[in-house]
Image (cartoon, rainbow over all chains, first blue to last red; front, side, top):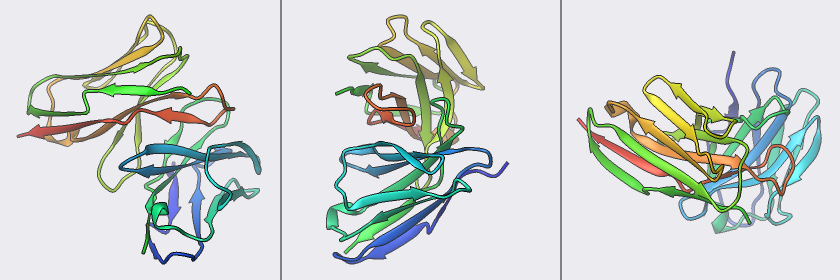
Length: 112
Length: 113
């Protein structure tokens, strides 16, 4: 079974731009969660989608948004990028009824 | 809010040695998860624990769900160079709905051949 895939793997953007990251979950998984990982703050939860609905949201500004499609694929968008948005963005999928989450390799975003 | 404290922050060991690390919380957890992350990759789920006192193994890795339900332990026996990475504990954030895990800051393991 294929794992979680994320595209692109690397991105370089400048301040003020926007970015869209994509995540394809494991086949059959209906829940997709997004996390931001930085050296200082560690892994922090952004939001979770299940059956195309946002089920939970972390403490991030409204510039961070996401969506999920009918095939469970998910995208997250960050608008008006700031230097502090530089991070590894991780997507994790799960069946939706438990706590075990399986992560993709991440998208490394660098904001200049 | 809930926090997970991992110790030690880092370990430098010789190949062949056993490793122990732990994770503690100020609140009770009903599930503990242990992940390993290697450079440039996402975390990989190693072991999931669901019951207080539970002891679960995955090869040379053994994890335990503490009986107080506020801690968990991960042991690695006879370490090898490919054990290098950062080990994270994680648990459910009960303030949120399903899908919101909180993570410890990690234990960075270095193995000297």
